[in-house]
Image 1 (tube, rainbow, N blue to C red):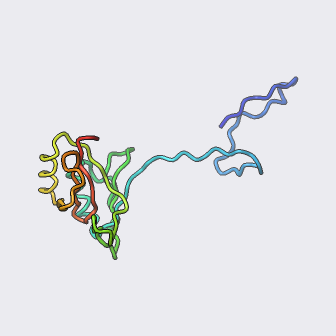
Image 2 (image 1 turned 90 degrees about the horizontal axis):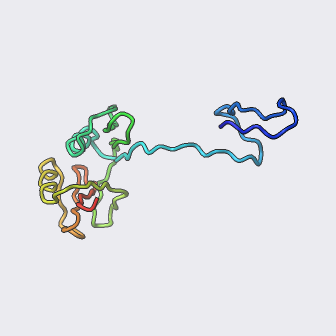
Image 3 (image 1 turned 180 degrees about the horizontal axis):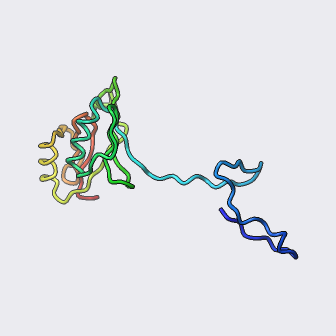
Length: 154
């Protein structure tokens, strides 16, 4: 980041306006700027990244932007996406049973809960019996068992 010249009787005594090298180490006691972080993706572990990516591609309309044998990323170039990572010993979440807790979940906003639920079930989602507030949101499970929500509140 450029620095402002210091006040001085001599213009030659002004501090440099040249930014420091990106890998420069700040002097002891000097404040350093924090790196800039950009949200890139949420990645879900699963047994079959291709199958889970197909499900979420249908839900979001996002294309595959990157794919290997063990990983698939959906999204739009330059925007955050959803990743799916092959995990050999993957264990499905057992929500609402805490035996294998969910670690995170997605929320999708919809205009019509019943239509959204029917569409998602037709794509391969399942609806667990436990529904905390079914008039406001629905909890569904993706094909790998990850809970996610659809809501008219978002």
